[in-house]
Image (cartoon, rainbow, N blue to C red):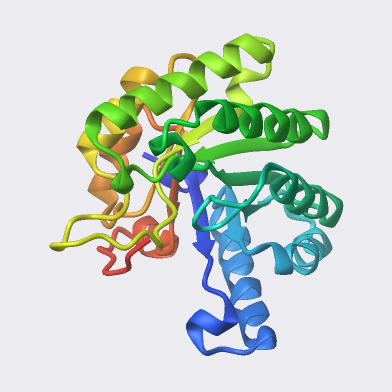
Length: 247
């Protein structure tokens, strides 16, 4: 199986989180992009501050590797207006894909109207600019029943507000990779969590992010039905090596 075409090769640490300068972070992102170019990896997933420079880097090399970025990352509690502004800037900078963190805190508080509003408005903005949109629901913060319910809500909202042709461009995604769990519980994609998402996503594609650490895990996820996998160890997966990385 050619898993490279399913991979979003990811680096999402800020300079503050990593202790590396802006210039050092940009160099990491360039190396990430070059590995993607050289190995047929579908996309790179980076922070918004680096989108314009990495898009230029990839274009200069006549590559079609997609550039993705995260919006409302990683807590998801940005206001709708803040998410729209961040997404608009990313689109202006050349992002091909926008991975929004849904306001799962608002969902857990019962404020589904707010969650629906941000989903509809932000997805509309992305689709108007012919961008892929992915909605991170942070499954480690949810019970199995909540994973099913939130995934089903997103599927229903998508079908109610967008055309059938739009649906393949609206993903439900498992995780940010930054959620802090207790008792050593996984903070990313699990086979159990992904199955719940797939069972409730309807016509929407699913992206598994975090926790996919071996080529066997990646192939199993793809066989289950996921269309994309987010990983900080894309090259290791392609080379049939196990990864010790978190995301």
